Length: 154
Image 1 (cartoon, rainbow, N blue to C red):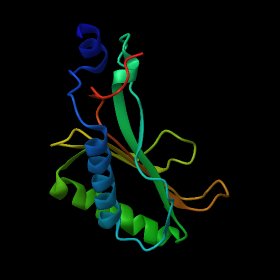
Image 2: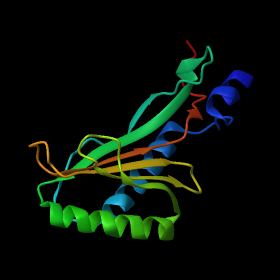
Image 3: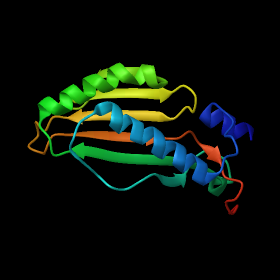
Image 4: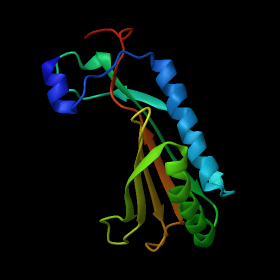
């Protein structure tokens, strides 16, 4: 397990996959509530994937991700939503690590945060549509890597 700790920087906890999916789904829903923008939201819910620990028993280590987008509204509404989100995140248990333009040519506004209790990672990017695409907010909520003791090993 030393190699797992070295690659990740922490020991993955044993957790139930459904519990982590529920947790990520709940945190993701709260992010949408904090945005308070009435638009369309992409459908897929939380998905479980393998987590690369650098060890040999990869199938036992999982991560839950919930990527989604909010679209169908103008940049004024999306900008106000991003402002509310960056204001509300610390009040809802998130530590904002980065808030500002990303490294893309369009310099999209980005918020990166970590939930202090669950260590869930959040990346939110406001893509203003300057490249001809529809403006939207892209959200990715991702759990910490965890050990799924119910998963087949190999």
